[in-house]
Length: 310
Image (cartoon, rainbow, N blue to C red; front, side):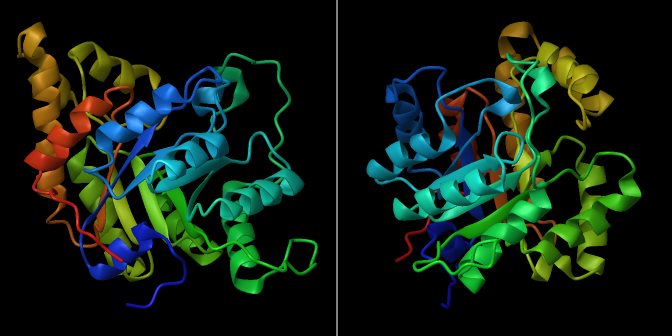
């Protein structure tokens, strides 16, 4: 099996087994104990753990430091990097820093606008966009050069990912936009939370028709609902989210104390259905401060035990 990096995630994909990732949000503190504890809860049930980068534009322990903490615990982190907060100098510096600690995966993102977070008057950067960041990492890795053209004596070895939202409007540009990210150099894709399975499958049909599934590994995002209130909020207030009315009705028909359990069951059913969708290479489970439920979801979905790769 030939791989371009030392990434465990890349090896899992190339072995032909469905990959499983999850994510952890760092604490709003300099104490790493919380993020390490989260990692230990899920480490045996996933192949890699994404560390979010000041998600929702709220200041937290930085993604790079949190990844290092997990790496030192023997876990496989995925460094999430947003272009909102750093110019190209800082982005390239952090890429080198991550590689120097043996971090082998990066997910390139735009980042939520700062107006949504706790520092709404802060200055954004967006020196590069997310596609340009993908290009940058691939350029540094494959060409061994900085954007300036200067050579890198020891280039970083990172497996490069990007995000996709199959549900944002206009729908007709969703597949072409994915094609652009692949052309930029994305090697794996983690999607927005998938609740509208019919629409996701329609998107995947377009992906397969263009042969894009043969150029990139696609992981649908899975987020279990804790309650009907959460479902209604995500449907109403979270941009780019597509929560079908029938899902809300299903949760509404369950007693309040049973809604979380029903949300887990819906997540498991979604994975089981999408495992049969051509072009799907794995799943990205975003439990959002509900990490203790990730092992149950993975086991009930038939994705456990996880394979061992060298």
